[in-house]
Structures are given as C-alpha cells and as structure tokens.
Image 1 (tube, rainbow, N blue to C red):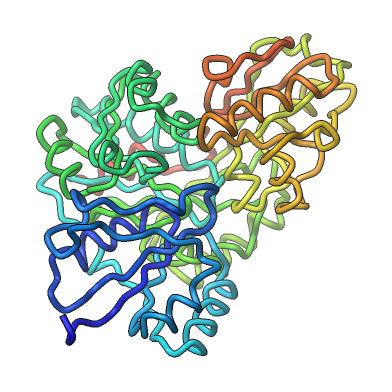
Image 2: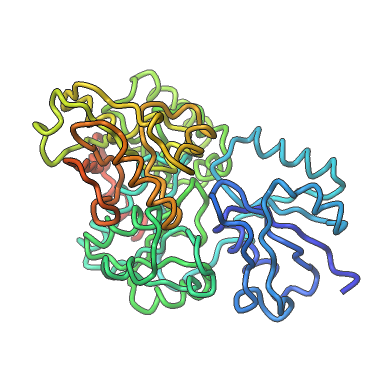
Length: 439
C-alpha cells in the first residue's frame, strides 16, 4: 500500500467513473483517494460504491466537490490528478493543470488507447465538438440507416449516473416505462426518449464493459451516442463528429472536442440553415487544416412545431435544453428558432419568476437571458422548474427540449412542442459514407 501512487480523479459523474473502471480498478499500482465533482449539481457528497470500486476499496471512494481539490492534494500528498470530464475550453483545462501543478501533483489526461473498449460487433460512434451541436438527431438518423441495411441496432449512450450508482451500473431502456422504472432525470429522458420513439433499445449506466457485453448479445451493430462533447468509450469502425457553425472556432479550442475532430472519419456541419455562410466557410477551413481526410457533410436542422397558430403574436415562454445553455454556452436553441419562425409576439423573460436552484442557474450562467433551461437533476429541481413555469406570465410555453416535458411535470398553460430533424444538403450522403466504411 505504501508504494501505490495516490490519485485524485476530477470528474462530473460519467467519464470519471469509466476511466477509473478501465485504468484504476483492481490496479495494485494506484490508490484512488477520491473523485471530485464539477458541472452537474448535487452529485458530490456520494460515494463510488464498493460494488463498483472493486476489491481494493471495501468502503468505496468518496466523491468530493471540486472546490476541495487543492486541499485534498495537500492533505493526502496526491501524486497524480487525472482530469476526466469534458466540454471545457483548452484554457480551462490548463488553468486546472496549473492549479494542480502548483499544489504539488502531476496533471494527467488519459488517451483513447487507454479508455476505449474493443467490441466484437461493429461500432458507429457519433460525437461532437460541443454540447448542443445537433448530435442526437444525427444519432437517430444513423440508427435509421443501419436498420434500413437490415441490421439490429442498439444504442449505447454516454453516461449520466446522477442517482444510486449501484442501481445504475447497467441500465436497459426499451420503452418510456423503463425511464420511470429507473427514476430518470430530465437530462436522461431528453437523450433516451427520442430513441425509444424510434423503437431503438438504449443502454447506459456506469460500468461500460458490462454494458458492452450485454449490448453485444442483442446487436448486429452498436451506435455510440456520445454526450457532452466527450470521446467514444468504444473503438469505432466509423467515427462521426458534429461541428457547430453557431460556435465557429470552438472545434479547435475545446476539450476533448478537438480530439473528436481529429479522430473523425465523417464530419457533419449542422445548423447550416440558421448559420452565417462565413461561419460555415471558417469551419471548413479548420477541418481542412486539422483533418483533411475526413468526409464532410453539409446539413440543416429544420424545426417544426405542433401548432404554429398557438405561438403567432403571443407571449411565449421558451424552454430550451439545459446543458446546451449551461456548460454548452449557447444563448439560444430550437425553441427560440421556433418562436421566431412562428412570429411570437414576445419571448418572456423568466428570470424574475425563477425559484430555488433555477434562479441559481441564471446567476451562474449570466449569458442565459429570456430563456428557461430545462434543468431537472432530481425531483426537487423538477419541482422548482414547474413552479418557475407556473409563475411566469405567458400565453404559451414553447418546449424546445428533446423530451416532452408534459410527461414529466404538470404545465398549467398551453404548450407547443418543437421538433428538429437532420437534413442533408450535400453528397455523398451519410448513408453512402456509412455503407462504404462498414464494407
């Protein structure tokens, strides 16, 4: 024990656990003292349970707030700090590296060879350079293409284990009722529900080796549905990366989004229907410099609503995908585009009516103005979201999130749901490129 390197893993409930499972669990060379938690509210204060941590950790491993990082390094004489979360700028990563170095420890980033599992089945990975790039509709389109080829498709989704980690070790979703059975948060349902509507089985959880073993039993092809601009957990046979023309330059300045760009076989430029042409040109210049061998697809993400007349001329409260607005850094999403397209009379500012942690979100992310992020990391926050909606004076609520919030919380106002789908604008098509690479 005295010769084991002491390690801290900096995370956000997902990549951190995967890195531990692959590189440190049952590894006699290391002793992981703690995880630290950032980005996601209320995930610290738990323990990574012994049932997941392995024989070296009979009491599990504590999960501490990242604010305690330097004190933990000094208190435990930490040797290595492993940075294990995503969707942060290169500058942010190096600030953390400087802090760790000044505290006396070594700062480490694990590579893809260390953290990607090899599947016995073909894997198509769909990743992005930033949260909110439009990855989810592309993942669904990939599933349609593969099913059209006669393949049984199973999606493995990037982790979001915000609850009981032991119970979330391996989760399988085949219907919306499974989301209720697993007591999913809004953030989880946003990712699972659209796949379930297409009758695609989804796996997620904590232990991605165990998840892979189960998914392989029923899949001809596995689709890795990445999240939070993270890299794939599985070695892909086809690597698809989305870039966002609303945030040009981020494909070169965010971690590990730039890694996804460099790894891509296919790069999809989404949202071209609402982006400036000069931004699209800039993205293509960057792709030519960074990964000239990747195939490029020009694409749009057109939005539709259930009833445009419900919005026209009305005071609208727009609810957008939470992570896209928060650590994704976007100032608008599909809901705003729908409000503009349907000529809403006014987009109502919800900030004066926000309660509890929802008000705290606006304070933490001041770039969010007259929009309401669909935050729902637990029942208490879901209730605060419901109360904020109820308190906000409006004629209609525009649901710009991938999930149908009406199934989760009670909304006492007229609602209109926004949907958006992947539309290709160039050739060769995604279908042609995937078929060629799988052959």
